Amino acid sequence: MNPPRLISQKEHGIQRSAISRGARDVVQRLVESGYQAELVGGCVRDLVLGRVPKDFDVVTNATPEEVRQVFPRSRVVGRRFRIAHVRMGREIIEVSTYRAGATDSDEYSIASQSVEGRILRDNVFGAREEDVFRRDFTVNALYYDLGNDQLIDYVGGFSDLSEGVIRFIGDPSRRIEEDPVRMLRVARFRAKLDLDLSPTIEDVCREQAFLLRHVPPARLFDEVLKLFQSGHAVRSFEELEALALFPELFPEADRAYSGVDLDPASGLVAQGLANTDRRIQDGKPVIPAFLFAVLFWRPVTRSLGRSSDGRPPSLVELHKAAHGVLDRQVQRVAIPRRISSVVVEIWDMALRLLARRPRSVTRLLEHKRFRAGYDFLLLQAHSGEVPLDLATWWTVIQESSTDDRQAMIQSLGPKPGVRKRRSRPRKRRTGGQ
Ligand code: ATP
Ligand code: MG
Image (tube, rainbow, N blue to C red; front, top):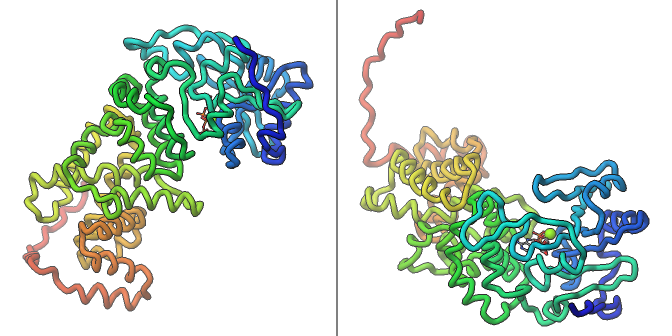
C-alpha cells in the first residue's frame, strides 16, 4: 500500500478554533495515555469545506474498554460494534476503534439480515491503514492529526474535496452491494454539500436501487429523516429522483406522482419541502409527521379520488384511505406509529378546517393539531387544492379578538346544503348502572 499523503495546515487551512473543545480534549487525553487518535469522517470533510461540523467523531487504536479507562465517565454503546460516548461538558464525542476486515461487511450491515450478495463477517479491530478502506467515500475518509495539524489522506479524499467530487472507495457497485444505504448517503451528501458525482455512480445507483428492498425498514426510516431534515429537503428529493431511489422508498407515492404535472414551484410537495428547509434555516423545529403528511398526501387523494367523485371526503373516508396508504408504506420505510398517527391527525385537522363548521371553530382553534393542520391547509391553498380565501379566514381568526371571532363565526351562517338536524325527543337517562 502506498504511504498516505500528508497535508499540512498551510495547505488545508483549517483553524484549530473551528474544532470543538471537547473533541480536542478527547484526542489529547488519548494521546497522552499512549494511544493513537485522530478526528475522522464528516467533521474533517466539513472543516475542509469551511462548514461547521454538526458533530465530531474520534477514531483511535484504543479498544472501547481502554477508552473507558481513560474516560471513566464514558458509556460504551452498541452491541455488536461497540463505541464509546465520551461526555465533555455539554458535548458528547463518539470514539470508535479502528476496524479491519470490513470491506465486504461492516457495522452498517445488520447481521441477522444477511441477504444475497452481502457477506457478513465478524468485525475485528485493526489499524488505521485498514480502517480507511471500510469507509464509504474518499471525502469521508480523511484523518486529522491534532498533534501536528496534518491531514492523513490514503485515498485521494483531499483532492476530491477540492474538486467537489463524491467518489466511492473501491468499486461502487460492490460497495453498494455490501450496504445499499450508501446510495442514500450519495443523495444526502450531494444535496447537502452540493458536490458532483464521479462518473458511473449515477448509473450504478439506478441499476442497483432495488437493493434498498433488502435493507431493514427501520434503518431506512432513520436515513429518510436525515435526508429530509438536513435543511436540504428539496435537493434531497430531487437527488432521490435522479438516482431512481425514491420509487424504492415510497413506491405508492411515486406512482401517484408519475403522470401528474408535478410543478416544482407550485406543487404541494415542493412547497412543503421548501417550507421545511426554511424552518430549519431559521432554527425552527420541524416535526417528522408533517413531512410524511406532505409526501403521502397525493397517494391519499388519489385513493380518495376513486371513491369521492370530486366532493370533499368524509372523515371516515379520509381515515380509511390514510391508513391504507400508511400501512402499505411502512412495509418499506418503518414510520413509527407515534409518528404515523400524527400524520393522520394533521390530515384530519386540515379536512375539518376546510369544512369550517361554525360550531367547531373555537374547539379547533384550541386543538393541539391546529397549528400543523393549518400549516397543511396553507400548503393546500398555495398549491391550488383548496380556496385561498378559506385558508386566509383561518389566518385572520387566529389573530382576532374574542368578539371579532364570534362575528366571523356568525357570518358563516348555517352551512348551505347542510340540513338542520331534526330535534328528536331526548331519551330519558335511566340512571344507576
Ligand atoms: P454527517 O455530517 O451527516 O454526520 P458523516 O459523514 O459524519 O456525515 P456519519 O453517519 O456520522 O456521517 O458517519 C461517520 C463516518 O463513518 C463517515 O464519514 C464514513 O467515514 C463512515 N460511514 C458512515 N456510514 C457509512 C456506511 N454506510 N458505509 C461506509 N462508511 C460509513
Ligand atoms: Mg458524523
